[in-house]
Image 1 (cartoon, rainbow, N blue to C red):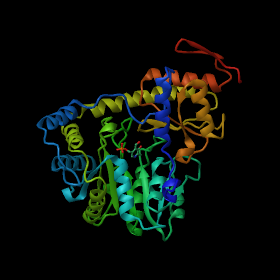
Image 2 (tube, protein in one colour):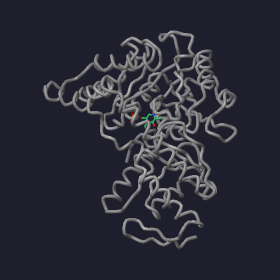
Image 3 (cartoon, rainbow, N blue to C red):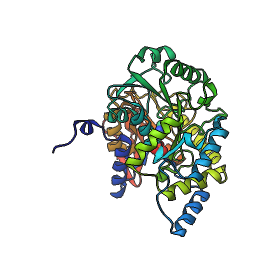
Image 4 (spheres, rainbow, N blue to C red):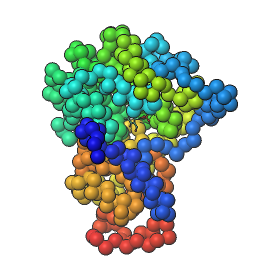
Amino acid sequence: MSVSQLAKSIAESPTLRLNEQARLLREKGEAVVHLGAGEPKNKAPIAAILTAASKLNTGDVKYTPADGTPGLKKQIIRYTEENYDRVVAPENVIVSAGAKQSVFNILYSVLNPQDEVVILAPYWVSYPEMVKMCYGVPVIVKAEDGGFVPRPEDIEKSVGSATRVIICNSPNNPSGVLYPESLVSWLVDFCERKGIWLIMDDIYHRLVFDGKKSPSCFKYTKKDTETSKVIAVNGVSKLYGMTGFRIGWAIAPRPLVQIMTNVQGQITTTVSVLLQAAAEGAMSGLQSAVDSLRLQLENNRNVMLQELASFNGVKTIKPDGTYYCLPDFRAYSQKSVELSDFLLKKALVVTVPGREFGMEGYLRLSYAGTIKEIQEGIARMKWALDPSAPNEIYVGDKKLVRDWL
Ligand code: PLP
């Protein structure tokens, strides 16, 4: 088949592939535990449903401006003021089909072929592929100490004359770690001195635990929004568990938003008016849903850590936020793809291999599900891997006997 070399080189999203595998196994009646999920089980906030439903009832479902409806932009401006202490204009805001499209639009709008994009590891699986789709070159920076937070020296070494962008995601998918304020302020200052765009993917920034707060990237810039190099990306997917609504946005200087709007206008025209209405409803309604999601995640994180603590040889850095943790399974296998496949086959537990996030030997585990799923999932993983665990386990009413340890 004749297809583009570039398109052929783009990897399948491993998280979407695993979701599909889990769905197919469940359809066959298998009792799968999904510790790979990037979404909680909550229902969308009622305000989102009512606003979208009332828009639908008018029957007036048409195109909207390519950069978003004035109503949703108004809520995004209010959100930016409340959470970032930054007053921005409607011309600084562009709504897209999820934060994923926001990040892609930014990269497409700022990169020339062979420009380099520095990505801090561990990183969200889609960044390197998106950079490649824009004919750019991903440059991965790992913390030299093997941890989850690269140091300024590590980053500086990877920046050269071809660097156009640094992408930073904190709290971080997959590690759950919140980057220290000192690193965020250094990144802002460094990028603005060097004239490099800094994409702050803040999609989890309000899902932070233990009373901590995610630092506002705009706090450290000495420039105004029009001359700053900082671009903040956000959305409703993680904040309200509204993953299927596909609404994200970027805050950037006006000329860049204009270019992104032209790009988006030629590709998708706009995002569905119904989904924008839903996001506007969620953002203008009661915000208690965010607090209850955060508290539920914090509690789930605690249960996950407790379960992992009794797993021989597994080391876990405590996540500060998000839906995820990234335990080190190198005591069991250096090859995370094989380990993840083994766990799905033998124990019917979905995990995401760390290799996909630049951390070979680790597994990303999600605590966005129920406590029961976390306990059941970890118990099955222990049974499959840890010789000190009982060698029989019940999965549904099926008794499984371990015969490989
Ligand atoms: N950024 C990060 C770090 C993510 O983890 C995700 C989703 O998993 C996204 C962006 C995409 O979010 P959205 O559903 O808004 O496209």
